[in-house]
Length: 203
Image 1 (cartoon, one colour):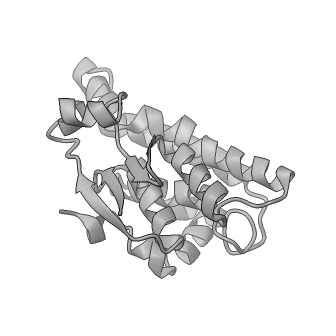
Image 2 (image 1 turned 30 degrees about the vertical axis):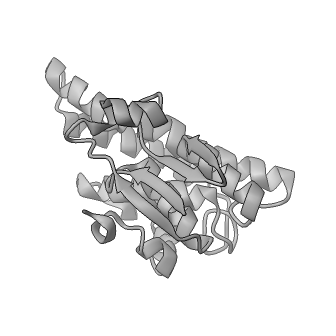
């Protein structure tokens, strides 16, 4: 049995849930409550030395870091990145623009730290960096298809959906990014993606 150690609102875990669903890979969910600090507990650190989620047990391996997990799933099952090297590079660039540029500065630890410093509220910080990041992401899109790269769901889409979920939670009007909004509307129609939504998996 595949086991996923995740938190229902974690963007990184959300990406992996969608990937597993799209590939029709059943899994057991083992919640790690980030708000309670369970990610820093000895049990989670033993399986994920960074004290993060997600962790995926699959094929006798224990994998961490959502994009590494998604690339492993693509390399062993296929379907999450294009075959063409140039297309793969573009999908990776779109994915990294979210997962490495927006998400890290807006995660729970950073938001709490910013709020405690009193320079600005954690909400204002998050709105600033998500808006800045999505503005760049919108400019990077070159697709005329249904999704971030043509008409097949890729790793870039798996990064985008959770980021838009977070943007909407703090009141950002994503319709100001028309290409991005169109793509997300298409993605939300896919049952495997809808099934991974935080409200559907909340303990």
